[in-house]
Every structure is written in structure tokens, then in C-alpha cells.
Length: 296
Length: 200
Ligand SMILES: Cc1cc2nc3c(=O)[nH]c(=O)nc-3n(C[C@H](O)[C@H](O)[C@H](O)COP(=O)(O)OP(=O)(O)OC[C@H]3O[C@@H](n4cnc5c(N)ncnc54)[C@H](O)[C@@H]3O)c2cc1C
Ligand code: FES
Ligand code: FES
Image 1 (cartoon, protein in one colour):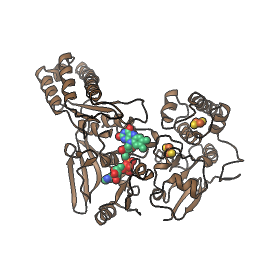
Image 2 (cartoon, rainbow over the protein chains, first blue to last red; image 1 turned 90 degrees about the vertical axis):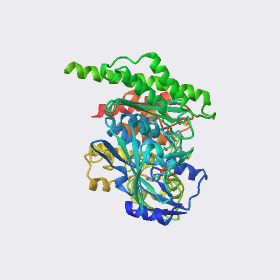
Image 3 (cartoon, rainbow over the protein chains, first blue to last red; image 1 turned 180 degrees about the horizontal axis):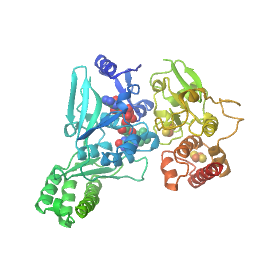
Image 4 (cartoon, rainbow over the protein chains, first blue to last red; image 1 turned 180 degrees about the vertical axis):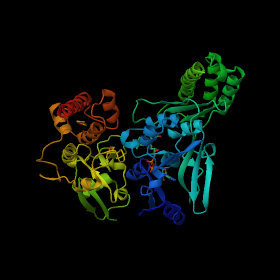
């Protein structure tokens, strides 16, 4: 095994081009487990810790450009306002020690259907900035997950950053597990209200071969909210609308039975989380809507 | 490969390190610092917790090559680290997790080294307040989880001098005690916090 220590992003790209089988290592919280247990014996490890810019973020007009190696702890501490869904999801990852090392770049690299960043990214809307010596491209998050633990990266590409839309409304993240800490999701659900475009986006974790959006549910809910004038009148969402939304979210799942839960449990739990997160976010939206009206 | 880094304030050099080796293995097997425990090697138990540039991490999940040029504090250096911090009214390394947020200059930090007694084992010296509190509260049974808990709890008290029970639980949520002495562990951290605030 060889340990490659590029000191800059350009050097890292050059190293990855020269050794396409090299395994990047950022926080190491996935990679080191595999090496410690001899599940993986890469020819080259490509250390990304030396590349300072990967641990930085920029808050722009429309979106946050989050460096691939920004640890979850930093996201929770610094980006709760801009990226509430991702900050909540980050807080559910493992433990403080793991959150101090692991980040979204590694979560995307592993592309596990259970990764906690994915539902939040799908719901918020995001693009993954990847680069190789051949050039740079932005991959829409919906096209990033290509199969169980597979993603759209080419062999010579590295993830540089993720561009995540800044929240324009309430966002929530919910996860089912046996305890609060150190739990890989049985299933998870992210929801974001986008009042500016009058749309709703979702993300489902651990209930299909890849993280997925419940697109039919999103379309149904967006139409129902529009039709009832809900965005303007801020009324309580009718139980029948919430139920239909929850059912459509369950229907978007394609789960399996495994040690953590059965397929039917997952489908059921996703429906419950969909209804709850809808209630939480909508109550929060109504609260803000009401207070703005009160001032005007 | 060779890895150069600072452990408990001392420059260390580890030779013939395998490229896939963990920081935990280097500490225990190459540098003779067995305080950090090896229980799961998969980040689940926290008994290998050390501070890397001030930040608590599982040393079993840090590749040895990633610590080149960086600073590590293990349980063996904890008492001196805490003492140094108390003397400087901030953090001992100048890298307490909040960039630029402490009163210790880089030069001061670089001068810090675990000293006195036997800095290999940490034996024979004074204990840090968190270590003393663990003993006084009876928070140690077999002791396997203790080093990781001490490092994690000490770091929390540095950030949050007056923690709530929820703060303590959260900060220690990555540390498992197989003897399940959690209530006594909570008592110990509360005790250390109370003594710390009395001392100020
Ligand atoms: C005890 C424990 C509990 C965990 N609990 C959770 C949990 O609750 N939720 C959760 O989502 N995850 C969990 N994980 C998994 C892991 O912490 C996350 O997936 C984390 O986001 C990985 O980030 P990292 O920086 O440590 O990745 P690494 O281990 O460094 O890398 C992960 C993968 O991504 C690739 N990679 C990393 N950076 C890049 C890059 N810039 N470009 C291209 N490829 C890259 C690596 O080659 C590797 O394939 C847990 C892990 C452990 C050990
Ligand atoms: S040995 Fe590192 S977390 Fe268990
Ligand atoms: S005291 Fe035995 S594992 Fe905690």
C-alpha cells in the first residue's frame, strides 16, 4: 500500500489521475473501518486532510458551497440557519467523535442508502461539484446516486464541494433507530418547504437501493397547497391531504428486509415520518407567515 | 513509512508504519502508549478517544499518515494538558476546536509538554480534576472505557464549564461502558464541573 499526501487540490487531482484506483480518505470514518477489518486493501490511500480548502464553506446569495471535508460538527454549529435540514441530519450521525471527522464528501463517496446527509440534500436541492484533471462538472443530486453504494463519480474524479440551496422555508429531518446516538438509520426522511417557488421537496433514506425523492408525493402536495391557497392563507393542512401525502411517500419506498428492520416496517415508518415532518414544517411556516402578517 | 507528530507535547517519530495503520495502533504498539484502548476498531465504543489538534476523535479511525505534523493528546498526557490549560486560563495547545478562540499563543502552545513523572505512563504525577472525580465518584469498574471517557469529558468541560445533564450525555454519547456504570460516570462529570466552578 502507498500513502499519497497531496498538499493541494491540483496535486490531489494529478494523483487521482495517475492512480485511478487510489482510495481517497477524508475523515476516514468509513475507509478506516474497512481497512481495520480487512474488507478493503487499497493499493493507494489518497489523504485529503492536507487540503485546507476542502474544510471551508462559503455562503452565497442562493446557495452554500460546502467543502467536501467540512465535518458534521461544523455544519451543526455554523450552518443551522442556511441549511437547517442538513444541520439536523448531521446531528443524528453517530457520535461527537465521528462528527468531528466525518463529512458530506465522505457520505457521498460511500453513497450508502442509509447515509444521513442524502435525504437532507435531496430535500433542500443540491449539486455536487466534482473535478478531475479533465475538468470540473456539477452533478445534480438527483443524478448522483446510481445504485447501492454507487455514485456518478468517474474513476479519476474527486468531490470538491456540494452546492446546497439555502433554505427559503422550514426544513425537517427525521430518523428511526434504536437510540439517539450511534445509530445507522432503519429509515429516514427529510422534508423542505420552498415557499418562494411554492414547492415541497422530500428525501427518503434507507428505504430503497439508493436515497430517493418521493416525487409523486411532492407533486401531489404542491398542487394541493396551491389549490387550497394554503401558502397565502396559512391554514392548517387538512388531515386527508396529510394522509395522502404520507401514503404517497410510503409508496415511493422500495425497501428490503434486513437486520435493522423489515420492508413493511420501513414503508410504514416513512409514512409516519412524512406526516410528522409535514406537520412540524407547516406549523413553523404558519407561525412565520402569521407573524409577518401581524407586523404588516 | 515514517510518521512525525507531537504526542503529549513531545515530538515523536514512528518508523516502519504500515500505510493502512491507525493512529491507535501507532500509539499503543509503536510508541508504548497503551492508555488509549482498542476495543472495537470501528468507531463504536470511543475507548480510543484522543485529541487531534484539540478535537476529540476515535484514534482507531485516523490513518497514521494523516497525523504527520499534527498534535495528539492522549490520556497519558491529560493531567499535564489540563494543568497547562488551568495555568493559561484557556486551552493547553491553542487548538481547542474554536479557531482563534483561545488565549494561548501558538508559541506558548508549542512549548507545552507533558513532563515531571513518567510521561510514558502518566503514573506518579498529579491527576487532572476529571481523573480525580472519576476515582472519587466510583466511576471506574474494569476501567477499559475510562481513558476515552476522560478525554471526552475533559474536552466537554473545557467548552462547557457548567454542563447540563443533557450536555454531558451528548458529549459522552460516543463512549460505551461495557460495565454499564453510566450513573456513576454522570456523577463524576458533575463532580468535576462543580469543583471546577468552585475553583474559579
Ligand atoms: C461508528 C460509526 C457510526 C456511523 N454512523 C453514521 C450515521 O449515523 N449516519 C451516517 O450517515 N453515517 C454514519 N457513519 C458513516 C460515516 O461516518 C459517514 O459516511 C461519513 O460521512 C463519512 O465521511 P468521512 O469523511 O469519514 O469519509 P471517509 O471514510 O474518509 O470516506 C468515505 C468514502 O468517500 C470517499 N471520499 C471521501 N472524500 C472524498 C472526496 N472528496 N472525493 C471523492 N471521494 C471521497 C472515500 O474514498 C470513501 O470511499 C458511521 C460510521 C461509524 C464508524
Ligand atoms: S476502538 Fe476506536 S472507537 Fe472503539
Ligand atoms: S468500567 Fe468497564 S467498560 Fe466501563
